[in-house]
Image 1 (spheres, rainbow, N blue to C red):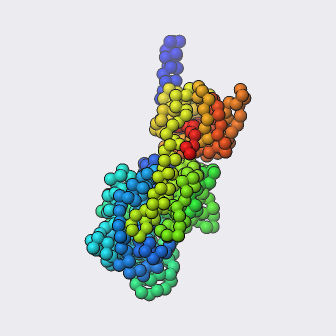
Image 2 (image 1 turned 90 degrees about the vertical axis):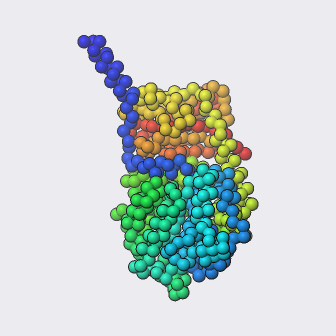
Image 3 (image 1 turned 45 degrees about the vertical axis):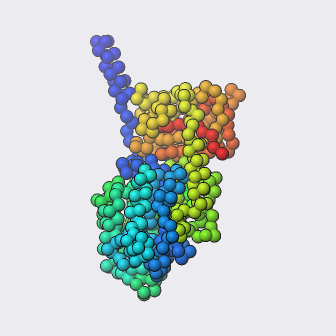
Length: 483
């Protein structure tokens, strides 16, 4: 009987070691997990507005003004890739209503311009260059149309939905369908030159309009002010809050009921909402220059500024969406190309060498051999360390064997099971004494902690101090910022 009991006990322990933790809270979908892998992408603005040196087109520009002297999709995408961007969202139609593809829905489109002798399709050229470079492609088709005489009437919705269908049908799989909150105001409107206001919570029939997206492009993440898949971070400065939750519950302005598309609760957007109803991570959008369109008097952000934004967006579990603005030639300016390359090199060189590689690592608790602490250093974000169900606090100790100098610490949760950790601190061994160097709250998809000064130590301790359920963590890294 004792032998049978012992065998059953071993079998029970073995089963526990093989059993993954239960999910916690709202969870990311397959398309959202794919979006998290992208981390940094660009949104490209290039319409007649570029040639007017304006930031927003009124909708009355002559299509003939759209005449880039040396359009080069490959040059733009090569520069983006050098900057570390893994996707491009093309503004196929901005608020001015000018369509960059030969659409049947409006005469105000690229075929009326001199581009490629009226036979061009800029959407296709960008899409092909993007895919050839191994990047992902997305589309933004503005719902506001300052050119269309139908805008503001009950006939416009069918036109807009037809535009989306054309774009969804003809340019391959999309990783994003991007939408913003600019809706209604003054415009050309077929020559009326007036102001037209709409109710943006009902006018576009978002439930059925986004139903088209889901049906035709099931892997396209829908971005808008309140989500569905990706929410706006609430600013155009490129950063999330220090504490950053991927979960969110969009609320109406009264703060008592859930929002409908067209509404947004900006105060909570930068930080998100702990235990929000939906997995709805933040996108941090920011132009490479001051404006979204090219203006000759502006200069791009410096690589140092871009690296700081990377830490405060991707490094806070969000995505960084960097605005790219081709000049009237139809290329990125040399200043932009250089800024992107230097920034991309800085990120690549910084994170090329995990100083924890080959280190000894141990945890105060592990769920079993499938979830032991060594998973944190295997370079595979799909494996993870986990504690037993009843263990909500734990310590990881990393022995680097020899003292290393670092100023960036990287932590990643295993987000397919939800965002769990809500408190932690980090210590280094200094002169045989443990010294606390950082205290944090959220981790999520990725947490990049930039220390004020580099530290030098051979041992690091990560203390998870707050989690409502058992802990999961997929990766740990220590890095020295490249100059």
